Length: 519
Image (cartoon, rainbow, N blue to C red; front, side, top):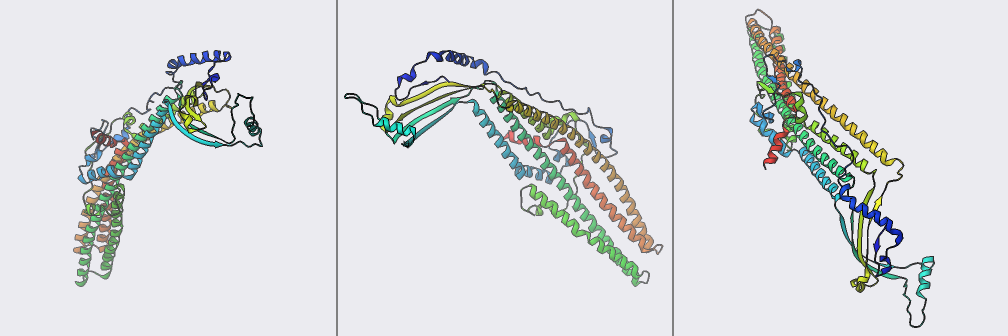
């Protein structure tokens, strides 16, 4: 390395040797070339991948018979919960989006990624550091170096001449600074910045994905809560009817028109139905607590607000779902996978840049003296200015293996992207089929409940007229209760399945971004 030094006023260090002049010319050529080399960026440039999706949804997924219809047009409103027209649901989703702890954790990961971007970008800038030190140093006189210092210190020159003293021990004071800079000749730092920026984008999309999952979980739990309250209402209604039937059997026994068997069967039916009430109440309490957790509240905090039963929010008559190709822009997990592929591609460039030579400049400057007062003298100054060229010659295959490793990780990220896209298409397709078939199931149950009501009314009338046994009434009551509960389950399932469909479509995070942008 060719450097220029002045140490304690020694002018000999400032002389240039004729042997170093060819090397200096080479360095001058390198320095002149820096503006041209700095624009070179090695490694592959990232191109957004094309999502491999089918042109449309299957006929099975879009088939509907008299229920809510899924239509392949883009949604006009990403706030899907508003389509249920339930103010309580809308309030819960908005409060959860503002207070959920998982979202706050995701926001901190975004902040960390952005800080990492700043750290990476700092590599392009020079670094300057100051320093100050004091040392009292003594060499052992039992070593060659210490013996030499002792011998030089005891020498005496001829009269009229002075020989510099070499005290042992000696003091040394130093103040100064050190500046260094490594130009990004082959774009390794730029690729690192590109990778860090893509990683930040992935963190943002992962937060969006967490928001979509949160909104879907709030919607699912809310539908389950209203469904459980509906089942509790149905069970209480049937219990009231069964108690009336029990009173009827007792009156008929007193009138010698019935017997103890009818009374016992009616009483057993009442207690059997009563046994279902604690289970349904447990389900209601569990759903309320789950919603409290999603809103970062203590257990039972939402009980006064949600314990009053309300109907399961009905589904809209039409559900716009768009086309499979729209998922690549709507679903945050696909967007995150694309950003991760971008980051992996940029890392290939970082690895390739390490195969090339690097140049760094350093410029330490300072003052050294044995006494503090001498630091004010220019003779105490020292400095060294010059470039350092590092050329990788033999690394045991490490650098080339690193390139291969980054290329393999890039291919893996590409496969992960394709898997995410394919999984998203299947998610929506399955959600559409489930939503459509559950509506058909509910329609069949509605007809069944109507038939069971008529069968129970007929059985009760025939029993009062003495034309049939009480077992027919009992059987009709059990059947009606079972089908009513099944219908309540299906009613809640239809709304829950629509929430799952909205979640699969990836809607909901856009409204959160819009609120942030408006602030």
